[in-house]
Length: 84
Image (cartoon, rainbow, N blue to C red):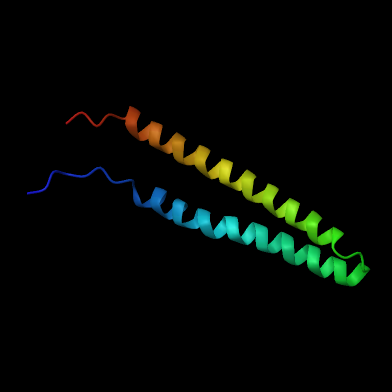
């Protein structure tokens, strides 16, 4: 038999899968908001670039929060003791 593998809990796996979608969505929403604001006001390409910057910043903040939460969950599960 193969040795038991230590796998992350399903909640952590789900958060990691969600992370990629969230990063894409933040940047896409920032780009779309900037694009449509540029079309409305007529300031091409400045609001598009500002929207891109806000989208990247939002993605970075969400990435940091998710990784911080995952690290906290991982350290909490390690402290509960896997002494087998």
